[in-house]
Every structure is written in structure tokens, then in C-alpha cells.
Image 1 (cartoon, helix red, strand yellow):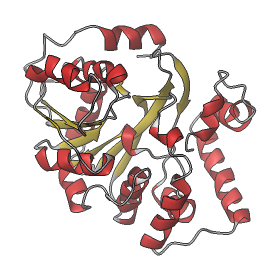
Image 2 (cartoon, helix red, strand yellow; image 1 turned 90 degrees about the vertical axis):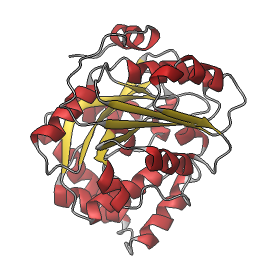
Image 3 (cartoon, helix red, strand yellow; image 1 turned 120 degrees about the vertical axis):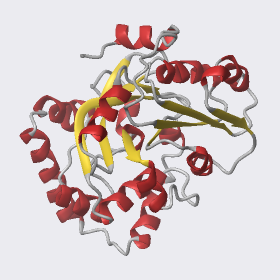
Image 4 (tube, helix red, strand yellow; image 1 turned 60 degrees about the vertical axis):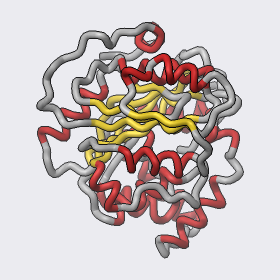
Length: 306
């Protein structure tokens, strides 16, 4: 199904979840939402989960003691939420680990309180895990949306077992996004969850751990989430902290950044992989139009990690 603005807005503004399939043969999915003062977006986030109509879902919200209307919104849907709490925590990584500790599902996914899940994606992911029991994680693309739920861009992934490992451990890049992924819960627990010393790059850390442990990863072209760009978006708001945490991760995994000339070669190879999988138009948008500030007229896009 092709996703457009009309489909997204209908999906996240109406309660569509009262009729569900009773098929319990699909694996249980635990979706964790860390939340703090994102009440303006939170209801749309919740509806994007509940409206999946997935029959075997566990939805957990860990709120960090919000002072806006977030708790009111959570209570509105509390009958459909497996567990929620609103109390002071130590940031997003801590909230994710608290949610992971409560989770009982076979598969883990996290969804920020200003982002949204794409229609039907839980069924898609569940069937992939059901069909291949050896899978450790499924990664997908993500759409970029603005505060009004309009699509303003996208981030696609490219994955090659050995090349992605080299790319991440030498330059922390190459496009795998944990917020656009489903990971087996026991695998994530084995990897000790999220590093609470990290405020921005805890997702990069998880990807590195998956790659270092030679996890069985499947990449799909479907968009998994709508990643919301707005003034308080964490990736933008803390954009200066990311490079510092990347350096920490390089030391953590005893990896060294390769010289800039080799990083450019890696980026070129990364582009070749995208072209090989048929994403030529995407490459043009990313490399040319977006960098020139002409891609959907959204100047913030250049600040979002590749």
C-alpha cells in the first residue's frame, strides 16, 4: 500500500481499533513509547499503535512525569494500554529500559511519543518473524513528517551484512534506524538493552551491538514509522551532542574512524548500494536536492542523521 498524507491523517485521527482479529498465532509484539511533555502529538502516536488492530500486542508507555496534558491523554486510552506509568526518570534510554523490563512480547519495538507507526506494519513484521524463526531483527525505512502530519521527506535503508558492519564501526553511519526496527526481545536483553549513558545515540549503540554480534537482520523497503520533525525534535534539539556520543561509541567498540578519504569512498559505495536496489530517485533527492535546501523546502532535513 502506498502511504500518502490522506491515509496517514485518517489513520491517526480516528479510533479504528475496536474490531480486531482474534488470530493469536502471530507473535506477541511489545511496543514501548517513552514519553515526556509531547502531549500535542501523543494522541496521534497512541492511535497509530492501537489502530494497527494487531491481535497480539502489548503497548507500554513510560512517561517521565510530564507536566502538560500527556497523562490526561494516556488515561483516555488506559483500557487499551497494557502498562503505563508517569514518574521522573533519567531520560529516554532509562525509560526504554524500564519499558523493556516490563515487556513480555516476543518482539520489541519502540515508538517516540511524537512519532507514528505506519498502517499495517505490525502484521507485516510479525509475519516476517513467523516465516523465519532465525531472524533477530527487521529494519525498514521511515517517512519524515511535520507537525501537521504531512510527509516532507524520507530515510531509506540499505543493508549488507559485512558492508554495514564496516560502515557503522568506521563512521557510525550507513542507515539502519532502531526507531524503524523490530528486534527480538530476548536478543535485545542479551545485548543489555539501551546504554543509559547515551542521550542521543542509544539507537546507534544498539545497531552496533547487533552488527558486532553477527545478528540475523532483514531489511525491508516498507516505511515503519513517521519520524516527526518539529522545533523540539530531539535529533535537532540535541544535534551538538550526537558527535560527542559517536566518539564515545568508537572507543567503546575499540573502533577508529577511518581517514576522511576512505569515509568518502564508503559513502560512495553506500550510494552504489542504493542505486543497485533501485533507489536512484532517492539518491538524487538526498545527495543533490536536499543538500541544496530544495527538497520539500525543509531546511531541517540536513540536520537529520544519514
